[in-house]
Length: 599
Image (cartoon, rainbow, N blue to C red; front, side):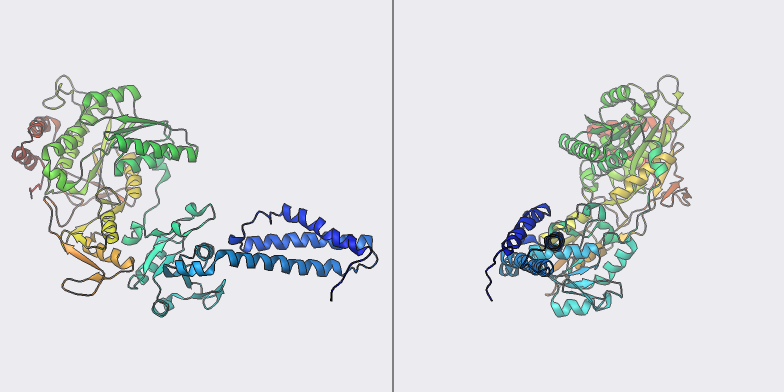
């Protein structure tokens, strides 16, 4: 029935918008974008209407206008809440264009994890419409067979059935705080399903509280291998770095750049970045500047262009900046490339190491850490043999008395030996994942191109470690050194490359196309071993490595040569490298490196 107000009722009609509009403005209801209205907007609407209702009811009780019932102060706000909430819900539905969202669906998704990250992700998916959410998977029995915002929660045992029944294409791991062991178990259980498995970032990357489909990541390389990193020893990391001047050679490379990232977090006074590639130096300098700004770190970053083959440049840098620590990561490390350019490989890996070690000795650098490789153990290639020679150089220079070098840097020492104030050490480890030349990014590119994935041999096996873990262990091993140490990192179990290729294909929701078969999505092609490549890598020349205080760091006992015997051989090797006399280079390497068998 229509009603026309009269008398004091006009006051009540006018009072409603006078109270409501300022309150709604204060609660931000007129700033909300209806298309993205969600639970937060509904809560704000209810709070605003509640404040409005309390004020309206209080005024009606106080004034007692004739013809205006007191119950109006209770009923009108309730009706008002329903009308405001309904209008915003209808606006959201209209503006979101459900038909458009249905047309944009790219796949059917299960979210593994019905916690806050999973629910937040489901909300983002509902807005973008890129995926149709089938439901959640969770290990918590109290959540199974219930629903979250209309999406059912399934148990892990039901996953295979749900995937088949609903034609699920993707599973997203929304478990940012899960332990590595739990993630590995989940991934292994999902591995045989024809779905693409991806993951959300860690909690640190979700701090903004916003999750979009763009945040979905491919599985980390740690997930692919199932390796659990050991937490670093903070004391060992900081002892030789905090408030010190630190020099990293090869600072723009895969290992060198990660060393720089880890070092700068320990707040050295100065970090010297030595790199021969202008672009690589620019990139790591820019990245570290941003890292320092974000963490309010006061470290002075000094980008230095130069080559380790230029001894005068190295000596001048050490004299000017007086580094206390040198991490020597500059090296040529790509096996087939060095095999084809033996002279350049030896000049960079051997002469470059000698030049940097000499500059460190002559300028009383406290510690010098060489980044070595498992390919230095009984090598079949020039790269591995050259890195073993670099180890021999440091072992020879690690005595109590350091030689006085000739003008050419090698050969018989000239003048009286001097007191050795530099602690030389080497850290040897295997392949690092996602580094330049690593097999994982190669496989990802080949997957994106539709295959095939190329493996050099069905039995080729390698040790793997993440770049971050390798860099942390290098810093900790360097802090343990007493002089001449050869540290070996525990790389865990070796991984067959063919198995890694199969795992990457399956976790991408695809199937392996076996040789001669017509079914399957991605083929694996065996290409044959490359020049100098081994089937199996080793970490030790000798036996019985010595344990250290760190569970992932061992100390090897490797044979060495005295400087007086090694120096003339280095002279001859340097001359052969300069002339690129490959037969002479290989003959010298075979004489010096135990177990070297040219491929």
